[in-house]
Image 1 (cartoon, one colour):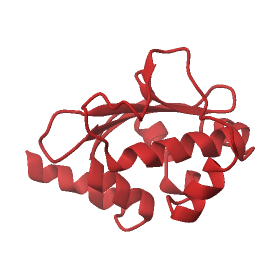
Image 2 (cartoon, rainbow, N blue to C red):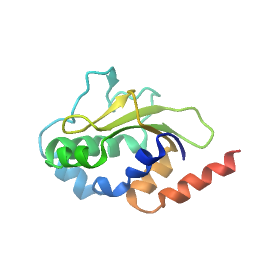
Image 3 (cartoon, helix red, strand yellow):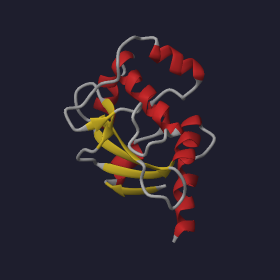
Length: 151
């Protein structure tokens, strides 16, 4: 994982902000009937990935968007975090960025979408590492330290 931007804002983003990506949570937020919040920025959908192949993180970001739009927790998180994050996801170590997801926890009730925005912090992560951090099987600090192997 690489991080650039406002480090104070970056450290405010923790996996605990969102529910874990379990099958139960996917079902819970998918059954709410509301679509993930959309942005006025140019976006594409997870159903039509820019790289032509889906990533494990697609469903996780989709669930995060549904959580913000359906749980009622969005305004609280926006007040607590007050930052916009971009996650650049690569399919494997050293590969180019396949997708960029924005998590806006600064405006309105928060939203998640694929695209770009003016971010406070940008995280670049391998798809598998992102999934493991969200599942709680990889410590974010350990993921950050793994980037040293690249240089």
